Image (cartoon, rainbow over all chains, first blue to last red; front, top):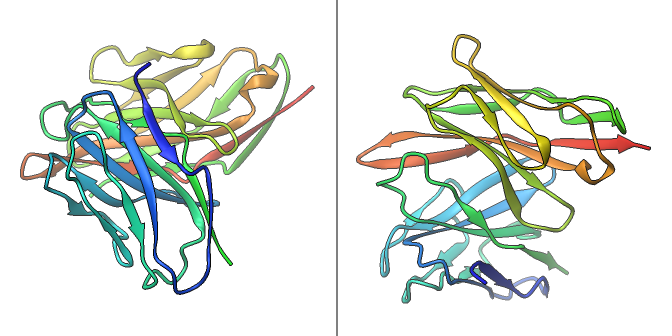
Length: 116
Length: 116
């Protein structure tokens, strides 16, 4: 089955610790995205990547970092510099950002991060 | 710049009655528009999308939406609500952001409750 997997589903972190959220896709998509979801806020873009070894900041990148060493993987690190990291994090992928004006994003099941 | 406004944060309907979820957008270019659904603690699933073809778009699970350029609206409807429709719904606009790139903007979501 093709799709996007995120792990873990629930994650707890102590203040001051970095934590990495996993996102893997087997859809052969070029583009991948990380969003943060807070109640009543909709989704906000953290980082996105159009191709391997390339990524750009989204609207709320401060306190986060990413890497894109492989096409199928786009891990997100929430660093201790992120002042309010408790949220639901969603990873998505699409065929491309540029070439398909109507391109659909496919979402993973999400990771709920709680800072204790 | 583009934006999306979902006019109701919460809509409650009785089972078997019509559903109307309202969405207005603004975009400098001809946009693509999407509706996604999210069940609790899950990722987002695409319901339907408008791609500058037919203005009345049919999606999954009996949902449809009509693109009205003059009103800059893309309201989501369903003739008869089912208990399984209870979820949060997001209206999304995808517009050209320059330099060959496209940008997604999410509405803040409408929570649909279905009363037995």
